[in-house]
Length: 406
Image (cartoon, rainbow, N blue to C red; front, side, top):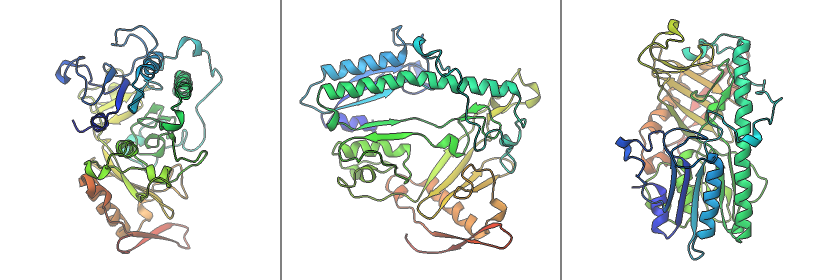
């Protein structure tokens, strides 16, 4: 009842949703397929997880094409007297990576990038990163290359969707009055630290996502370095619509001031929270009997990508002076990982043992505050300054000095 389309609807926005919603959507205990969440005027949600064909929308078209066609129809049928909001969620590039027929032979020579942490051993990392075979067997590399290629193929239909929508907005003379956001729900890895494919790790390849925006007041061809989070999308959209964001109880903050400083004043956050609760199976996977229970996503070649105790919380510091990550695991080792991404962008070295304990304490306290904050308190977490200095042994050390409110 407090989701952002409710507020848009109250302000006379015509709202449209099509595509993947939530994994449990459509189940009887979640209201069945007839349930339409409040705030949406037109609603075409996929039942369950990602599919490209044989989905429950009583249609046979390729799903990305169906989403495109219905959104174009919505724009044709809308009332020109009122603003509109569309949220389009194609399954691509989620598994099962089924490309449209015309694109299934594209990118035949494409392989996953071999740079950065690709097929590097996960030494000094939590136990799940220490269990893959290194180097990866050829079967794993073949599998991940095929997945990478198929993911690209599925995105060609998304390219078509974007192109057709932009042309439609241009034809109805709304393009220059419309904000377009292009983003995703999670990152993905293909071979990093010898993990074939998945998305559940704390590293940049899994937590960073694309975000591109165009619209009124935004200068073209610029890249902003300040961090933006999923929780910022709703307040930004509400801000654009003219709703007073301070009247809405959200953890995130609008980033309209970053994109279009001529329209808004605002500040950026110096650090943010990353959390994940691991998932596992209560019984042993028959295909990988030596591994025991509590694990999941053990494919290909019985490399497990997740487990019950793959549960962590991180504070990620990103500003003009520091580019750091501090993570704590809820496991029997109480494992901690710390990275300086300025000198180590691929997070190859866990520098926990090289960091001043007082700095670790500051990061721990910052993490606790971020995990417990709600609403305005998430934007008022106090900052402290961290100072680096080189030492003759070439080891990185950090020293801490209280600096009041920064």
